Amino acid sequence: MSKFDQFKAKLRPGQTYRRADLAQWSTAVDRHLKEAVQAGVLTKLAGGLYYAPKQTVFGKAPPEDDTLVSTFLKGGPFLLASPNAYNALGVGTTQLHNKTVVYNHKRHGKFALGGRTYDFRMKPAFPKKLTAEFLMVDLVNNLDQLGESAEEVLTRVKARLAASDRARVKKAAQSYGSERAKKFFARALAEVGAEVGTQDAA
Image (tube, rainbow, N blue to C red; front, top):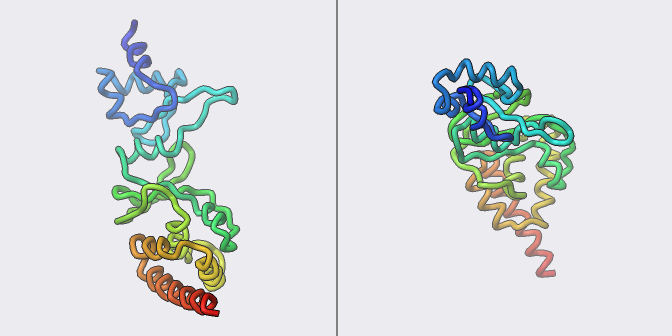
């Protein structure tokens, strides 16, 4: 078996690799990388980032977002989010956004990886997975980027609070909200709580 065949045998379809990961299997990694890309067993996603394509009945599948981002960041933690997820909150946002936001502790900026753009944002804290409460807070954090009337969105978010787990929303706002978001939720939760209390008393 040639050195290149030995190198190729280490690759796992569907896996993403950094050049440093691949160097452990080759004494001539740059030559083998070039040969692997030419042979189609590796696809270059960005500088120093490669993907071993996984064949499906529809052709070569693109890398999974979480696998790709994990390799790019050299591990977690991170949280993938799309502004499109706001639309599921029922607060009237309908804009479609063709981007994936990556909350993390290491990188900041927009990076093109494998033909897709990822918006990396460094945040001190974020949950392990997306929740309705986090998304509601995140929506208010990013009001100025939505392209919709901030006042109307905030009015609908406040209306949505009556049917939400207000304790969990309060905790999410305190943990992940900007100063503006914290003030908004503190005021809105107090007002909604008072309204609900009045209705209960009646």
